[in-house]
Image 1 (spheres, one colour):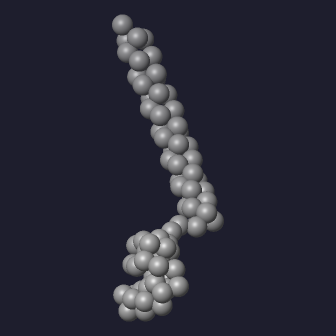
Image 2 (tube, rainbow, N blue to C red):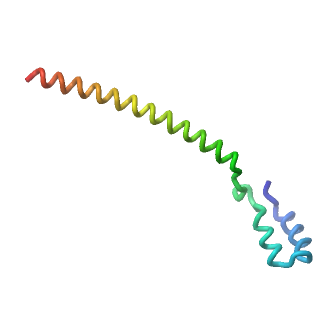
Image 3 (spheres, rainbow, N blue to C red):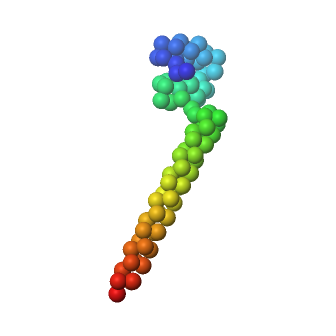
Length: 85
């Protein structure tokens, strides 16, 4: 969960006397300030990649089937044209 500005200011103010400015700034950069800054977990990334791999596999299968059909049709047309000569 991202920290809002009020919480960040409060935490920063309490840590500066203990850690100093540099260390407090370094520590605060590890906490996202907005939802978009949240880190992706390994488990989430693995799940997303597995879903993507599945979708890509489905597309590959579909493309292979379509190309096989097109190849068969073009071969049939070519055979017909040759027989008409």
